Length: 518
Image 1: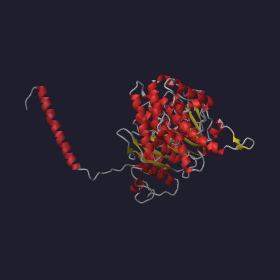
Image 2: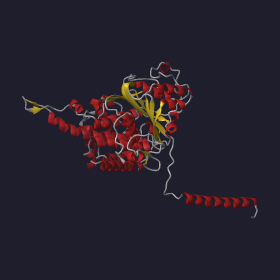
Image 3: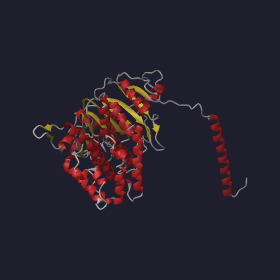
Image 4: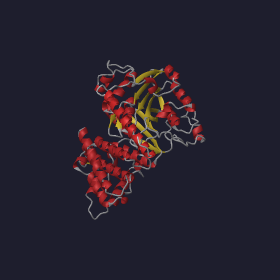
């Protein structure tokens, strides 16, 4: 399947499923988990059938009986597939006689999978009795078309992520959708910049696990190893429902990982301080009411630069991400824009972080990248193996985006490739600044140079002079872009006429109110 065909299929499936919901009494939040559960079941059977063929071919023949042994659950685990009992197979449900209770049958399918896989125990949705049976049958048909039955693993994972994104855009969930889904453009930016292709990958605010999924794609595209050979993933997540989404997401993509439900402010459940090769996160911004009097917080070894005095969790997260890294580790994370200039105790912590030489880059992001909030943000990057400890790469990407629709922006593939080229060049790697039109238009001399309004390599001395601010806009300056095709003089004349007309109308209105004649 081509990318365009997959996109078309994603849209068709969503439209069909959303149309069914629109004709029911369910909210998007009530609908989300059952739908994602069905996608997992459908994908599980697709993967099961592929693995079954592979296992059958490789099973040894018993020389005494001249027959192959029976396949086992362990065979399917080895093939990266979920073993399915007969009543857990999607086609069993799709072909269930009308007289049977479809709602209970789907619940039973989920229970059987959980019985076989302890990591999924209590994770899969089992509330299908809350759906109208005709609605459920309609949903099962949506994911049982020929195109869906024959789709392969990576494409199916994309469908799951697409549905997560669409539910996020509709605000589905106990809280706003942004809590369980980070926009793909920002995840891809982080993955491109830190290149997580080996070792321990940790996300202590993992939501639905999107960072791990994109890391998996990166591993597959950049190494000769399977995902589970190359990396080990660990996630922590506060919200119960998000933990379930993350575990389902990993299962869909065949990624082995340890996801723990816990509060990262008051625990370090994976004990990964100083051990991580890569840290990636989109933590909740500006969290208040963190109890800093708890003994755990006061003695937390992840806070070497001190506990911030103000009621805000941003500089707790920032220190966690830095402390988790090993001596060569890299981190990339999304953070509230206010953090780059925060004062008082937060400024002192930021100064100490800058003085480590481990802050590698800061990228400013424009409004409307998130689906449920329009605030701008920054993406921070740490690198404990950074060659140039005396500078920080500043990128102001607020004018670098593609409009998806009136309320959503993202990065185009060319823009992502271009931004990645900037940091690769900063690291001393050979980069082709003619690789795409965005790069050619931006870097006219076909090499890295500070570009007004976009990027600058700021020295620590400059940063000190700017009171340890990490806001890229302070360093890159700004460029005024003049649209030569726009009739500024004509437009100013129109505005003047409009103002004169409004002024006349205002005088007439005041005269009428006062009962006077001009």
